[in-house]
Image 1 (cartoon, helix red, strand yellow):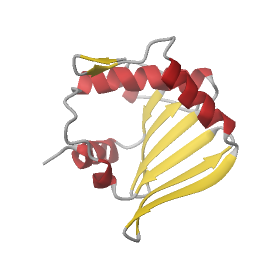
Image 2: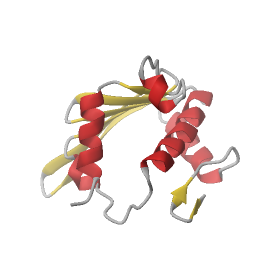
Image 3: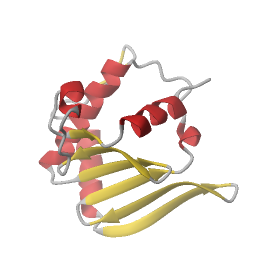
Length: 138
């Protein structure tokens, strides 16, 4: 639900349930997203794993996003819990380098201290930090 500049996914959220089920229904394939003949993202789907490579992460900026880091982390925890419950893994890459793993195959070590969940793995602190910078509006 969205309200007071906070986005949270509760257990009975119909939209997130629909999204996870839609992701689970795709068994394999590739999606390339380009604009003006430049590839901005590449999505590779294989069985229960979805890898999203943000080749030009700046393209996905949300300039009006006023949600704080805590709220984003909370939403990520809730969504990754739904992914795990459905046996799915979402891998987020930045320019070909692994940044985060959410869901079933996430195996956090030190990142568990930050995220306080078993469902989010920070693969690279450097790449995750760069993604945050890429998404931030100037």
